[in-house]
Length: 225
Image 1: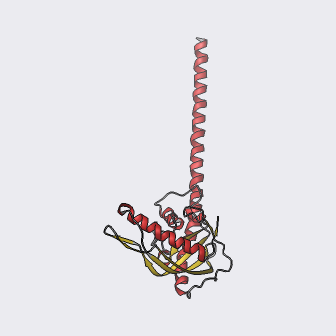
Image 2: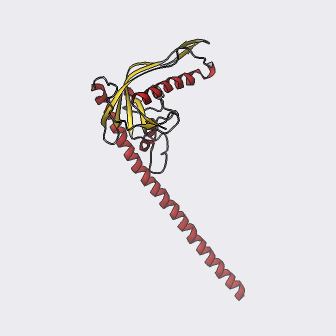
């Protein structure tokens, strides 16, 4: 009888200890979730400030005179000759500043960081990391004020029309919205190309994006690895 009583007491003690452990575990998970939620809120608030700065550049760029090569005295831009490589900047067309889109006018870089950031702020995507958004990966923005934007086209099986972008390019520091300088870019896809009709749209977009990217790297003296 006494043995049974001891077993019963130990079972009760173990059950209580288990309940306390489970309670502490549940509390710990809640505290971690609350911490992440708080940090995400801070990151979103920071992103909103960045996007407000980006939107405010529209009026500035519209009023600027034509940009000339060499007006960017010391380029702070860092990037890669690999289209998928690291960049400390993003590229937006003037008409996309108010609300950076996930599908830009011309996809110059494979990942539009400011477009992704806008989606994160709008709730269409989750934050990149706890307390961080894609806006945190962008230090500078190149704004293109186009004179010409013509997408490359494939009509029928073999009628190819080259694409072209001719634009003033202005570089801004996103920490304060300051204009650092700029230049002028003129880029075209090849006069002739062999295109697979089944992947024509994405291939032609990539061709034009690559051409603009290379022109920007050269014109704005992007430090590449």
